[in-house]
Length: 102
Image (cartoon, rainbow, N blue to C red; front, side):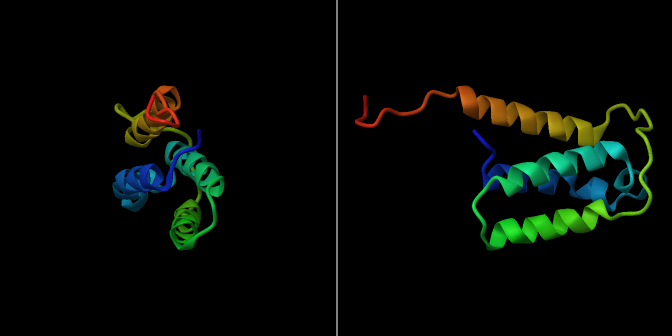
């Protein structure tokens, strides 16, 4: 099950402090998270919110010259991405309601 728009918006919001932080904005860890979010977002039906988020993520992806992971402990963008994966996985294994309430 792909992520839904509210989950993607939540993760995007959580990444905002790191998009604005100079050291993080050009880190491959943040950009890996952005790529994953964009891929999930592109799986959703087109709409104004999807377009707005794609544009914002595209702007963030164009930030300066990227650098390798600096080994920050904790790596906040990496942890946020791991939470995104966990949330997606939890949605996949959650029992789906039956068609007739049973």
